[in-house]
Each structure stands twice: as C-alpha cells, then as structure tokens.
Image 1 (cartoon, rainbow, N blue to C red):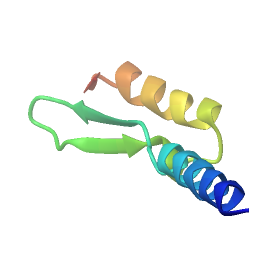
Image 2: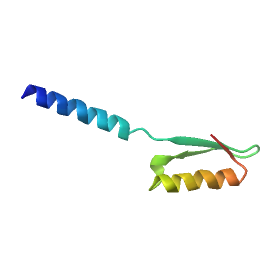
Image 3: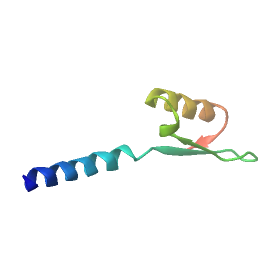
Length: 63
C-alpha cells in the first residue's frame, strides 16, 4: 500500500513539474522597448505563435 502512495506522489510531482514550465520569447526592436511573450498568457499555442509572428512582422527580433 505504501508503494502505491509513493508511486502516485512521484507521478503527480512529475506531471505538475512539466505543466508549470512555460515557453517565453523576448522581442526586441532598436529604439523600441523589449516585449516578453509567454505561452501561458495566451489561450492556445496557436494564439501565442500568432503574437510572435505579429511582432516579428512589425520589425521586432524575437528569439
């Protein structure tokens, strides 16, 4: 029984550690301000990608 609880605790720790990671991108423009875009701030991966594409198309260097 202790083994089952130990495995469950380790599994939940493993799952939560990956869900808290967020991909962030910093976009810079000479003469402009830096903008930090994080995937967790958008409703989907697609919306995040569109924001990065928008700033890239507006003359920002996003990495």
